[in-house]
Image (cartoon, rainbow over all chains, first blue to last red; front, side, top):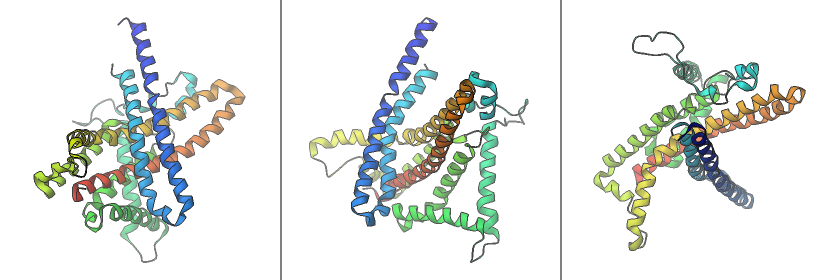
Length: 78
Length: 248
């Protein structure tokens, strides 16, 4: 591709790829919100489930991170 | 690098801080000492200083440094036994080493003008691949060929099992990727945000106090992220090991 147009496509594509991170935000918010809702109802059981909370956040986040990776690949590897 | 950004105004690129560059003109024999290796060595030195030296003259009533070391040790030991059970303590040295190295690298990377070792996929990728191969090897050593049934979900309806097999297989092999990119991505993104805000300060003149205040808040958040990501990396290592040890 000619320099400028090709670069433009790269940047627009990278920007579009970051939309996927919004999904990660929704997912992490769901996990944390539901944990808090459960923890407020039964505070005694909350501490034990903290590890599960972080695992859930990590898995929800992973798929958003992939879109970040796509953005980076578009910027630097294409 | 952060200091340079403030002096150099808005011309400094936010991703400049992640450039790996050699510290000396000539390579030392086969080794090229870069800022990355320097900060890895500093991380190891801090770990030794934090854990080996205070525990040398360990007392029943701990000194201040000793209690810091014991606190971290007890925290990770409890996490390991919670996820893996008592037999998982065999892997505790490995898990604790990973945790300490990542935690110290993450926090040392927050020092202005320092270098974040864990912001590079090359570094986190090696650690994630080590975990991946360890888990796969242990799985096959423990269960033999039966380990493949990790991907074959018996409790699912028969028609769905081949599809689930494919999904489970892909999600197993994508683990090292998500494991490493999660840590590197979080570190890189956070530091780039700090740098972008730093570029606003000279551009805004007196109103530059506003981005400074925002940066203080973001910095506190980054400190939290540094600790949480080290924790997440280690707990996921435990979860993956648990798959290999106990199947499901």
